[in-house]
Image (cartoon, rainbow, N blue to C red; front, side, top):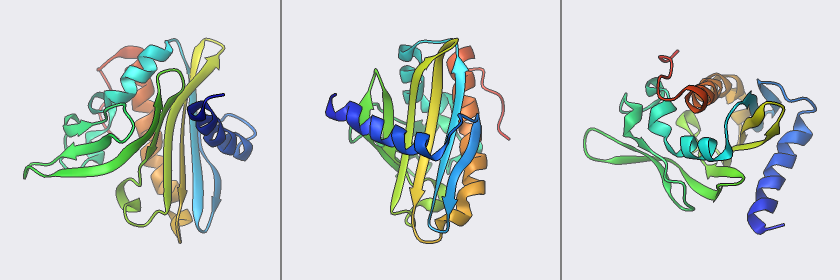
Length: 182
């Protein structure tokens, strides 16, 4: 097993051990200082389409959850070290996270303390991947967050990340006609 595959497997094993069942969206683990979110859905698609869609973040991310008010200002190049960034109106750029691992056969792993977690999380691993499913592939997104007192953020972050996951799944299956934000 390659180093990349082992790392993706380790993150996946953590999440799978926390959740005995594959619920479509939920907080699967939580205590005062950490939480784990997991989302999954079966899609009629290919790994190539999933991987490409992940990098086209401006097409599926909800503009209501950006600083600029426009998701088209977001970029997510699918290469290690790349910035999940947002171009702001004043010409500055804001880093939401960065790519830690990427593999067109497995998925993408980011270090991404999003929104109110920025500067508070000691760990914020966001992974988007897939596995063989009954009707194509199962799209799987996990978000593992650690930091003092951050368990209290679980439900709020779950609401935002669930929406992003649903928008990504819709974009993969139906293209850029993603429903308006919540």
